[in-house]
Length: 89
Picture 1 (cartoon, rainbow, N blue to C red):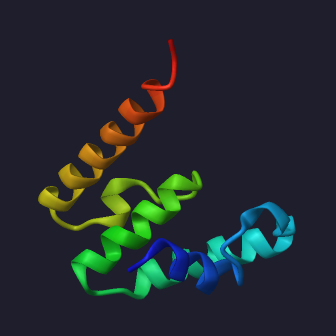
Picture 2: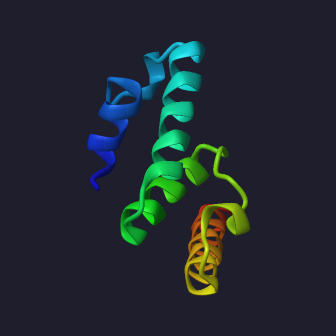
Picture 3: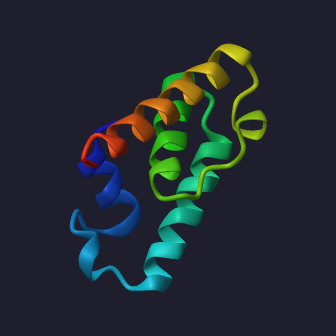
C-alpha cells in the first residue's frame, strides 16, 4: 500500500490542504471500515498506521488479535514519536 494511493482512495486527493472537514471525516470512516474488514495482516497494519497518523486509529487490542502485531504497532508509535522529537532543539 502506497501513501499516495491511500490518500487518493480515502480523500480523493493527495493534497490534504484543500480537503473539506466532512470529506476528511468520511475518508477516515471509510478507512476504519476497511480496517475492520481486512484479513491480511500487512494490509491491516498499513491501514492502522495510516489511521494512527491522523489520530483516528482504534486501540491496539481492538485492531490486532496477536500480541506480535500489537508490539509492532507499539514500535511504530515509538519510532514516530522519536522522529517528531528530532526537529526540536
